[in-house]
Length: 242
Image 1 (cartoon, rainbow, N blue to C red):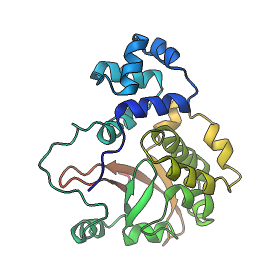
Image 2: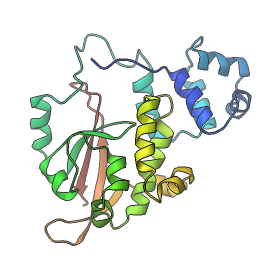
Image 3: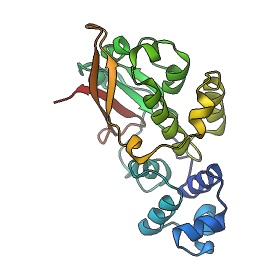
């Protein structure tokens, strides 16, 4: 079973700490009483949708991350009676993944641990297999820069997602492990502290070197959350553009 580990209040508190903001400053920016902000963080108050939106706005949490944060932190988000959720892909899950002809993998957010990758993904991204961390592959495997002509832009997006999502949602020890390993790369510290422009956050095209033709190919990035059956990972796909 996947354990419900973090609350929405814990995420708000850890996100606030990560951006160097006091509770009072956050409350002012969110236009809510400080006591409300304190009660949300402590778990004494369950925030309404409006309050949570105001807090996320104050903390500059990208809109497209908010639904996933809710699914990880709100115990009432997942309906009861759906049965056990496996920690690792079942044979049926793997058959589903293998049926996709273009690169695809199962990733656990916010740590970007890859729990399974189909054969196309492994051909396009050498060195990736079940158990690979996408961040560590991006920064430490020389193949990353070879197959991603726009490596810097892709790496910045990945680091930003990890930095925004991880505090309060992932185990502190696991966050530190990934950051320490990636810190061996000379680009890591600069990318960790550099904010992204809004136009950079909306990139949905990935330029990849085709392993067959050796030519650069633009692919559309898609991320899907399994609805039925429920799974704790996301399906990441790269598909040819129209």
